[in-house]
Length: 566
View 1 (cartoon, rainbow, N blue to C red):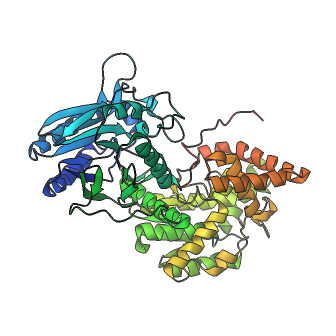
View 2: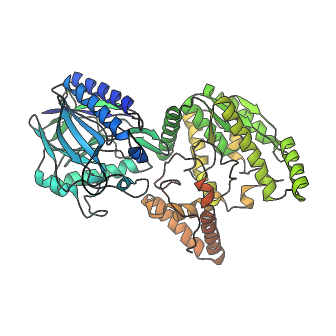
View 3: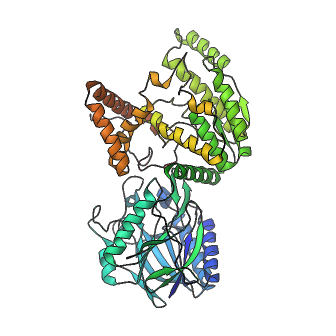
């Protein structure tokens, strides 16, 4: 029998002293629970992913000092084994670092295993910094249990689709009683179910129980959901840790089964996770909360237009940071409707957020006059529309600079995709909360927040309003774009394609195929494709966005700006 503590923690990238302290505290809890083994996540000492911090002068020395602190602390708990993830130096040709798992006990390193499969797709770029480990299985006996060890990607290739090497082959031959996999698996819709499917299949195919330990927390664009789990070859997933929260809990492993400390079967694990909209809510809230905390912000500011995007951004910010830490600013121009201010007032009253007003009509007029005097031609059309957005962006940044608030940008994925936004205007900010939600999802999530609250957080008038940038007389989004129900299906296919969930992909592909069956529909699809390509330069200069879908703008979609291929 082996008692195992899962230490699903929320580390901060580069905070070596802070991370080590959290790990030591979790180990003490494990020792108090009489655990034999405490397991931390991949690169738990540095947090995932330190990227080019690994190349900074003195960084690896600090890693080694922090690891020394863990070794020292382990002497105080001589019966406890610690499974730790960290970068480690190596000699010889190739990269000078490896991504390793070390098992320590009583002040000594009992085993080291180096990650074999280094992902370089989507949001990952590990081969930039690490050399792969050798194709070997590492197994350590702890009490009467033989424990095999893997690191994240090593366990994702049992079907042999992505790499020539399958670490499970060697692991199966080594015949451990249990496989421990430490992970830093970022979250997106459907990822939990994908993990369960892949590791459940690997467990059955190889006849090996697997304990999968993940990190939790928001790091820039990425959010890690925790949701560590245990899987048995016949029973499937039998245990799951909390989602979107730290969780330090102990299991018993006995005769090939995972049990509670009392020797009972853990509560059943539902096959489906959170509903989509609730998943979006929790992922974005944690992403903002950790981004603000790690970057030293306690308060946020949002430009409130009276539209759905800023309304949803404000509601999510209030949940993450608290109403007293969020400020809204309305900035009406001569083209603003009466509802833009009135609906903002209703929204902020519902949320308990102060609404400050800063009209921009005079500033815009003065700028227009100065421009015409200097250049002999007045501003009109898009140039005048963009001026209004840029004046608003300047006011919001001025507020951020003056009062120390984090400016949240309010663009959604549909508008960001086709460039229906103003560079240095409504793209200003430190973080985008809804930039990975299509416009139809923005409406759906807004309704979901109201339903969860049991009242109107976001006023019905905002939900019913036809979308408009209000930068010209009578302007509506539909003047420049197809209906969002049409646009979003096209964009899903163009941007995410087969990365979508199967049913969502089939729906989008079928929809676009029907469009392409007519000359007008074909022309529309190609126009949207061209808009997505032309506006890469805007996206490259925009704030990071919280990723919730399989392929988000940013590190997950890397496209050249100056290119011609179609």
